[in-house]
Image (cartoon, rainbow, N blue to C red):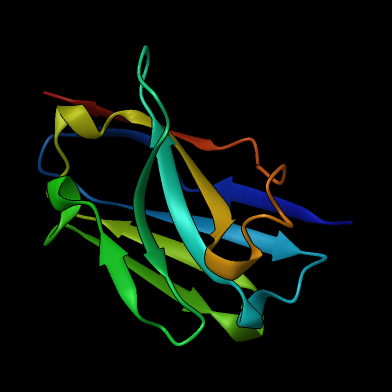
Length: 119
């Protein structure tokens, strides 16, 4: 079964940290570029950052220096380490196939994991 399952969200105070995980199954994870999206209430879903199959990373300016994306191909798992969290980071976070495989997996979304940062 092809699926992405996010976990690790929760409620944290501003300045705190969380580590999100995304377990992938049914896909050849190691050859795919992967990304993390988030969607805050009333806002469009945005790409937070991505990691290529060569382990190159990119981030949106608002999270640079605070968030780190990594992957463990042996475990088919994508990670998002979030430090120095701010209330504006509150959103549902999703992992997604990006890059060259994005069209083929356009409809593949997990349920997401809720991150709530209190001030």
